[in-house]
Length: 309
Image: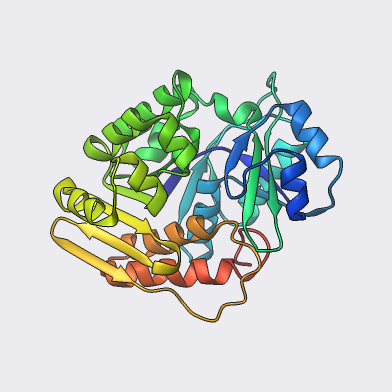
């Protein structure tokens, strides 16, 4: 198997909203907020659902890789409930090997409300449910060992059981990649993430905000210097400034595609990672990897949701 992902198994519920909705509900645009089940239900009660998808950041990347004809797998914790069943079937339909045996749990399957404003920005409210309770017993070691790369999700990291699950997976992996996921995650787990990036990961995906926060940098020159000294592959998306891959003394930049009809930024980073990893596991150059990431992220932002097809 080429890549196995470990992440939050979350059913994405996609809704279009007005700017007022964010203000009324005290939500900060373009961030991810963790909410309880009651708040989740209250938010959803006033909305029209556009689409539901078997999501979660890493799952989106893994599906993208599957759609590019790579053999891939995913580990994520779900409940044996209606949403859990639909989650599992949704991944299998996309030809993703699902390495988790669901059972009856005390918490329901996780759900993420993706709120899209008219400017195409997305704001997320996530009720993790059972997804955030992943532990080392949930990790399929044989699946990890048989994969070229294990792809981890920063959203999933938390002290206790999830941390043990990460450590279990890292110890058995051939190579490890991770997405820092969100500035909120970086700020919350800065010392742990810094340790992972410096000592445990072979490939780190981050956006500019996340990496600046992680290393307390004042400007992007500091990031490039950090990347060169790191000695591991650091891949950074920079919005309108394109993307950069830094490996030792190599700094490769790639621009954005112009004149796109942007409708929804959901999954842009996830599909960028999918495209990049597709290039990486198929021995393309770093420039070509950035190009494939840019191609996929450019396609996904011109449609609703995080699925290319």
